Length: 358
Image 1 (cartoon, rainbow, N blue to C red):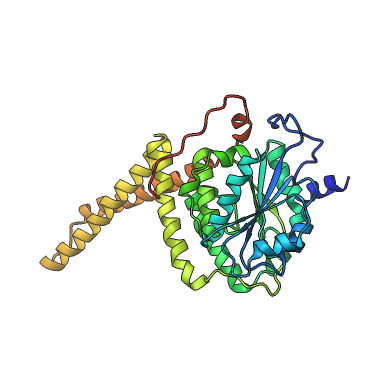
Image 2: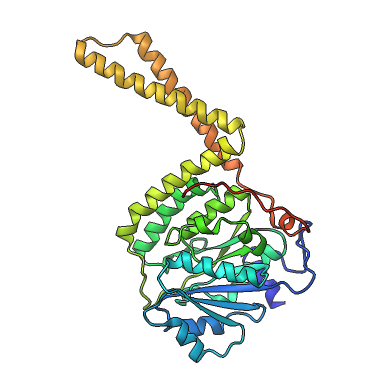
């Protein structure tokens, strides 16, 4: 009963009420939790202790931690579910998570949950994060610290402003316009979907969560958000906001254009493609025309004719109309039908990813 109340509180249906696209499991679902470990010895034991019994495997990835977090866990934790892996060189949070994904696949995990080891997230919510995947409602579940105002206010001001800005940008780059808090590290992914990801191409640093969303979109995965609070204590963030801001911005812009190429040229050609090409062509022509007219007027001292300027105005207006139409089309294309049920069918073929260099 308590689990049902918790599910309802987070906007989920109780586990006894299953949708028609529920994934069928022959036995108890295997849930694995991945914990990237880097200077978290003050919190990681408590994090492991609070992970629910429904979790089958707890995978601690020591990312070349100077404090030897992996050894610390081995010496002080008796939980038989724990497996510790070590990186010889630091690979970043994304690299640690990807190592955990690979090990979780060997355990044939149905759901893989990533929880940070710094105690900012409540590991007791692992069942809540797994539920939308197990019930067939979603392929990927992520946390949202901005859903409740009081929870958002607990976040440091500068971090809150930065996350709000990244939320706006990442909606365009990932194609998930209904999501927020893109850097939230509390996530869950279906095992079959994780198996279809281009692991080696995913970003291994702080852009990991956003890049992961982009890759999931190219596969057509459905994303659901779980509101939750974050707990900020004396732990130190290893993210240098001023240093990483331009890196995040540049990568989001690059990812946006990459997504447009995948979804509107390489994979499909549809109404959105026509609106995008039409808007871009008219806009470019109009802008170049304005620049040329201004240059000609400056060199000759004579203004362009009213008819010529009117044509340029029409081009720019039509470009704006086409691009707004494209944006509306792009928003409507956000995946809505989970793909995990299809991936779990016998003889299911791997989904197609694109062999790009980035």
